[in-house]
Amino acid sequence: MRPSQLFAAFLLACATVSCPAVSKPHFVSLGAVKKVPYSIAGDPAGAHADEKELRVRPLVVDGKVKEWTTGDSHDITDRSFVVRRALRINDALPGDDHGKNSEHWVWQRGPWLMIDRTSGKVTALHLPDYDPTVSDAVWFRDYAAYCGLNASGKQLFAVVAQVAARKPILSRKLHEWNAADHSGPACSPAVWQREPLRIAFQPAGGEPVSYDLVGLSAVLVEDEDDGEAAP
Image 1: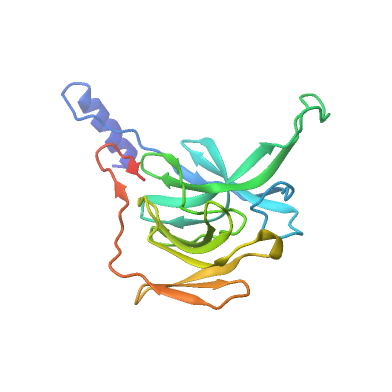
Image 2 (image 1 turned 30 degrees about the vertical axis):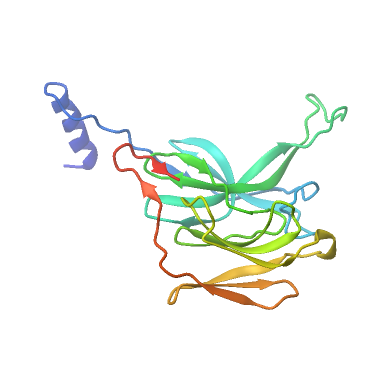
């Protein structure tokens, strides 16, 4: 008997006897890639001065497009993954004439999202000291490594953040930062090593640095009762 027939038989049996509540299954997927015009103007996340297009994919939950995403996704567990959001923003100024509704829509990069395949829940992640002008997150397990800026934007830090932790696992000052003195990325993408667990950073124009991460374990809690994660 096929799974669909077994499920139908189960529902028929529940019509005559008391059965436990059956949670509705959710279907989560990333759709096909398409290219859209990318607006680097006004977008601090622009990584390349000559970038003209952005590759985006729809995040589909139960047959409906919930968000648009860009870049590669990363599986944290067998049910949770992260991916960066793509934003479609109305870039029209008051008084601009762009046709019927005076709207001017542009595509730009957004923050990171965490998606639970079981519950269909989509959560925006707030990574400590993450700044789209300099930060390029490299994921390993539930850790994100990147160069970040402090609140004043004048100091560059090496940061390792954990999805469910309130404070960064690692936050070490690299050097002073002045955006006017830099035309490219602040750091090369961080490099992970498993044994021993180590993260290496290469600041632009600076010496490479690495840090050992000792005694860390996953803190992401995925609730099996209601099917929702607790980021």
